[in-house]
Length: 424
Image 1 (cartoon, helix red, strand yellow):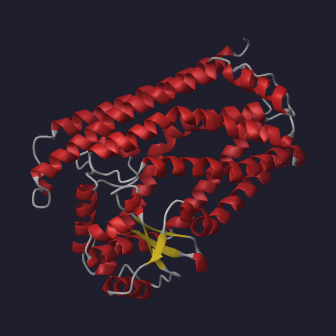
Image 2: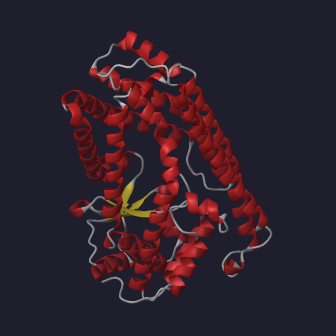
Image 3: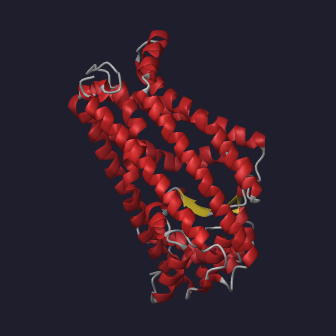
């Protein structure tokens, strides 16, 4: 093949990602094993030996599972990309369902969905074997499979029309189709911010208003003194699926609402819950959300621009066995979908570096609102204990993968930062 150089370049890029992931996992595993004998000095007053030993076991089990999962997905990607199955499947699909707009959109949707079936056994094992073994799983087989079916159905309902729109814009928009497609995608995502909490999230979880009482009064008071108003504070039945806990707020403007996992309410005291919510409000007050959306939009714009260039290059699709047709972008779109994760992997450390900066700022804001660090540190320590978090990750591993600083890093940052009126 004339352009085998590109096929080889892609192969080595995929292989480099695989080797890097395995190396990072090995680094983390060795670091955890090196510190497995005793609780780190900083946490000996808050975590007992048995819990720490369990957290080490949990981390090592997840590490081994991750190593297998990474290898499984990389091998699957290599087989799919280089075996010729993609051009063969496109030819077969076209012969059976035609080459209309909706048919082509369906192909771009169905290929990732079909490939996701190969990951189902891994997802099932992670939930009903690994998480079950360490006491986190609370879901049933019926609920798990229903969640999967609902996810597939939503992908069809939402994804198919969106892909069809992009294909139509490719034909209608001429040289600037990618800019129209990007704008349409951004509008779609903003619409989802509004619709997801009201329509889609309730398909998976039950949301109920936080009952009247001291906790609700405390959280509403927090909202008043920080100038953060929300339509409602709701409790999500996270315990229906897992004992892991979380808190977040969704929507924007008058659609904004605060959501607490029921597991979080069980695990933390009222003052600690207030600190967690103050942290989330800190993200809002510091402008992290629009900044993140803006960076994501900029990244998507660059991605669409790159697609607009590659879709014109015969060597890009012919290297993988597709016939090049300038008016048919489906092969190029599919290859970008398949290779997107391989490219974005190398950008993970940059994105996580910014995310960790935002977490430090939100922690400092929460400490300022709460008038001290005790409640925030107490909440972080309890959450680390209840979730069996890895207290001593390898520094290189955590810098590459972690979107949040480690517990020790967050405590040290809280300790050295002055707690002034940061909530204003």
